[in-house]
Image (cartoon, rainbow, N blue to C red; front, side, top):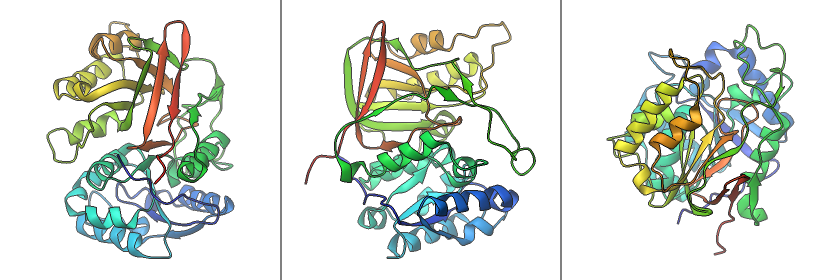
Amino acid sequence: MAQWPSPLELGARVSVWAPSSPAPHAFPRRFARGVQALRDDGFTVRTLPSCAAAEGVSTLSPVELAAELHRELQDPQCDAVVTAVGGWTLISVLPHLDWELIAEASKPLIGYSDITGLLNAVAGRSGLVTFHGPMVVSEWGEAGGPWRRTRDQFRTVTNLSAAGGEYLIEAAAEWSDELLWWDKEDTRRRAPRAGGECVRTVRASCTVAEGPLWGGNLTVLSLLLGTPYLQQPEGSLVFLETEAIAPDELAARLWQLRLAGVFDKAAGVVMSRIGRPRACLSGFADYDEVIRSVVPAHLPVAAGYDLGHSEPMATLPVGGLARLECADQVLPRLVLLPPAPH
């Protein structure tokens, strides 16, 4: 069972790390806004050299990025590491990480999208719970500050080891998948919309499934297949998030996971809300039918959760235990379970 890191308490000292793309350098206004929002929320914030760098396909070299993370985790003036933004290059950093150092530091690591690789590898190799949650540019940098539900769930889940008790991940009544180009159009908060795709049971199969949370961005999980960093535990609750894909691409990506054996180790599946959905060229647009046709029939599936590339977004503890309750004609329940007492 994974070990939870130290709680992220009020006044914690947070370091911002940019291992995935030079977005902080490319979009300085939004990045500065995100850093200030963290400070306004009571955190002491330190931005790392990678946040000011733009070299080649990334920020710094993979070796430098790994060393930067190691330094922060060993620094008593750092209580947690929040990633700046997603991108494409985190996978090249993984071979250079010291898993024992990360486990010994036992500090929260937070991000999503490209950071999916880090979250799951740390949970699997270091035995430490990580957090699939908001990043500085994408969520904290929202005009007017992060969405309240994003902020509140981040605060609650990163402190769950101290607070104890179960926590229900509830879907937002209002959400947005509006695309505003950073540092050009994002002078206002994204417009909320009510209704549309909502949390629902796609397949009941069994009433309750329980296990450690594992997953993240569909595209990034595909990058990890065939590498030593997939690190999926047996009996896991697989959560998947994606955006702006048509049902045919979703089917292909789910089939890739199925053929790689991901669903053989699963106890249940939780799908995100799919922001900016598209139909196939045929006009077919039924994502739920795709999920039912690809995910093995014995697994319960819930969909429509606020897990990634839309606002607001829930924070999930990767490696932490959760319970998925699915029944026909009833809204599903995704419940985070508190760490076992020492």
